[in-house]
Picture 1 (tube, rainbow over the protein chains, first blue to last red):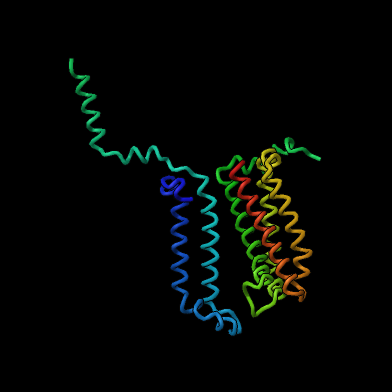
Picture 2: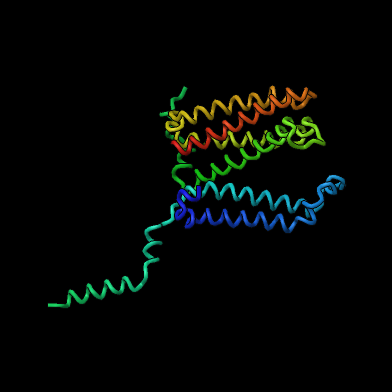
Length: 108
Length: 153
């Protein structure tokens, strides 16, 4: 799907945010791996759900809901590719054109 | 009965169509709560199919998840109605929307009749597998229909 409109996705703020949030999901898994995810049997045996497990679940839910919302948002904005392409042209190209333009006007 | 053309002008349509992010916010509610509904139904379905949660029963899973399913479906349908009112004529004429609406109606009826009865009782493995598979098929049809409504509007 990314390959179908790679440049548009690349410059889309929602797409970039979605990728960052996906990376944060991985970070969240790593951060809570030892204390929560590595030993689910301990969670089952605990009389109440530990605070760090609740925190991990809340962060996970928040991240995935945000990812879904960003996914929807991708279609609502179109990056100004024309402006981005214009900014990417080397500055010397414009300067060269202006020089040629001015010099031709000044020539009798 | 009001025709779709008469529904074109309404307060919800004005709100969704004349604000920059109104439609997107309604869609987010629609998608996120549908995820909650279908996710909790899928937990029970995975148990019925014998693919997950072997140490617990489908009845226990159903007991633990039915509230989230109900809330998810209620918000999804309400947000969906608001989205429909933003452009009733387009949705009314869309074959994919009709497919999705029909599949959703059948899936909800199935979920609260056959699915509920089998998941909350101790039916045979064969019956559980068939009921779980039909449930998955119905909800996948709803998702597919929903995706194509947007793509082929």
